[in-house]
Amino acid sequence: NSFFHYRISRSRLINSFSSTFFDKLKNYLQVIVVFYSFASNSNIMEVDTQKLLADTESAMKKAISHLETELVKIRAGKASPNMLDGIMVDYYGNPTAINQVANVSALDARTISVQPWEKNMLQHIERAIIAANIGINPQNDGNIIRLYLPPLTEERRKEMVKRCNGEGEHAKISIRSIRRDTIEHIKKFQKDGLSEDAAKDAEADVQVITDKFISLVEKHLEAKEKEIMIV
Image (cartoon, rainbow, N blue to C red; front, side, top):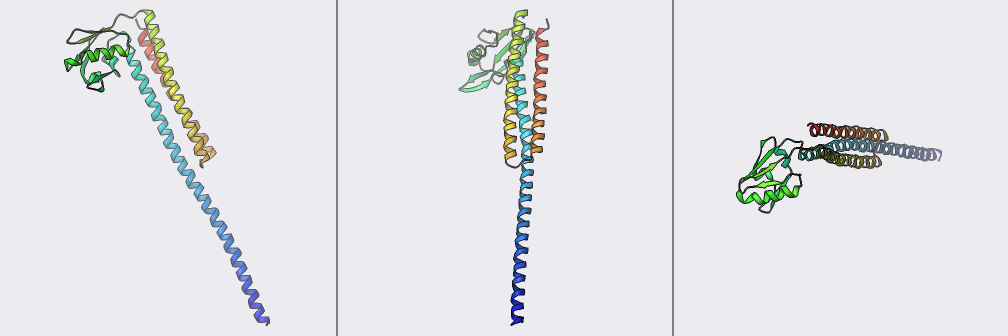
């Protein structure tokens, strides 16, 4: 009986030890799984953050490109075919850039000519230029459209500088709006597992990118104002 009792006690001890050991091992493995899952998720978040920063810079570049296009339209006393960039004409029901349906060129420092490849496009082009309100009235002689740039007065130059500043402000608003959206995404990433330090670093990077493009807006405005005010 003593031997039988010893075997039962030994068996219970082994079972108890095994149960305790495997429970601890199970808990340990669960901790490891959670840790690596968190680490993996954090790494994924950091990769997503880098992509977000790249997308942010790309969006801000588009804001600068739009500003450049608008500033080109604001004439600075010298005729340039680029002044008609962005003006769309109705070409058989499809909005089409003027330079896609006509030859646009500068005849001299004060004159732009628009020679349609199809004569029936003359009136469509004329109407499109008038609707664009670029401050120049097109002259249609039945074969070609000419745009004559009058000399700029000091008052007119100041008005143009004011218009440039307005375009610059629109660009800044767009850039800051992009920044705000990016910061909101970073905060969401942080809730999903991005570390606090990584989130702070990302926000700092966003500010650096924002400052760079705001500075670029200022440089464009400064150059355009100088161009306009040269008599």
